[in-house]
Image (cartoon, rainbow, N blue to C red; front, side, top):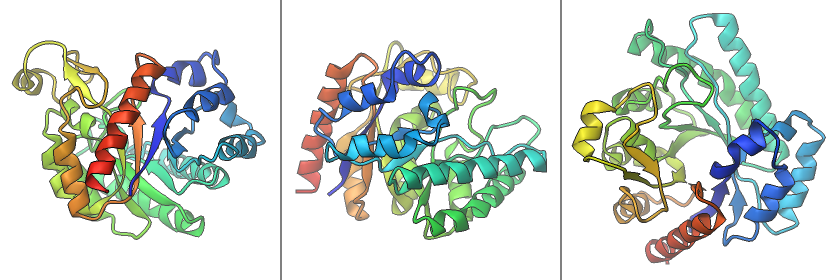
Length: 294
């Protein structure tokens, strides 16, 4: 049966930028939820001190929870080889971080969609960098998970592999037992595409999932696809919302994941309106999981 984790979507600025929340405070909030794990973020300010790594792991594990997944954002499509080598080194440090926290999954991305980059060039650069990290990941028992992502907060350009065809081309290019997909249905809407179309193309490679939901503040899906699909800014018509009340069809998503034998972690990226909302999203997913994996 899939296990549930949570990600501090509502507290990223506080944990990563202004330091107004301590990681231990987030742990204390998260462990009260009906979950098995907490997805980590490499950019928590306190993660800069390696002495904190075992302390955080102990704090989570003493509540009977684990840290299964690490969220980080390598940029592997830069044209400069020295820049890419530095990104590979950063990814290996994030693998070290994941290992120290007791995790099994560490995110990778393709990189930024720089205007001068052709699709074939970008796929090749990203694939080479991911492949350069895979032996190190295997040594540490870590699976690298590539997400159909939109855009890191600190990037100038959106994700190179944001569009479905490019993402699938990269996933097909990298074949390794320590490599899989972290499926995020909501991000597909930001590409102006259908999350179920993507899932059916990659479901046999999905090893983890980000669960969230989006709803339209105005207009229709067709308006979104015409005006905002793949744009630089976050789609203004879309907003995060409580899971089960937005655009994502979790019955269809879980039907397909169940069909292919998915049994991995589902990490909830929600709660932007507070812990009560996050708790309702946890309850929704817990109920759905029990329906599809009784």
